[in-house]
Image (cartoon, helix red, strand yellow):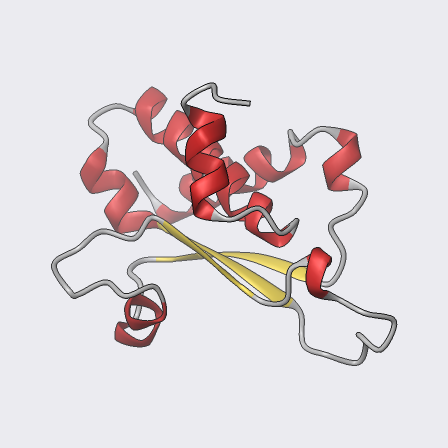
Length: 124
């Protein structure tokens, strides 16, 4: 898949978020990168041969105080090549992008990986 289409799918995934979430996305950039850097992999404790599909880098809303301001935007990176390697068809890529975007946006709202796994398993 070409980069332009992939970026469009990421933008569409962000645009399709429910209003209750999209209205609270402030000071955040969502970007497409081909691969995670060694630094990004080390941030989450992964090695070069492990897969990272997306990454949230910033201060979650739940950790911001009234002193939060004049800071660079939080960043959500969606990694194109690992997603494409995981998926065989455009429909799978589209679904995976939507899943990864929602996952990383959840981190922006202060939801950790353990809780996200519970939600994905249907455990409320």
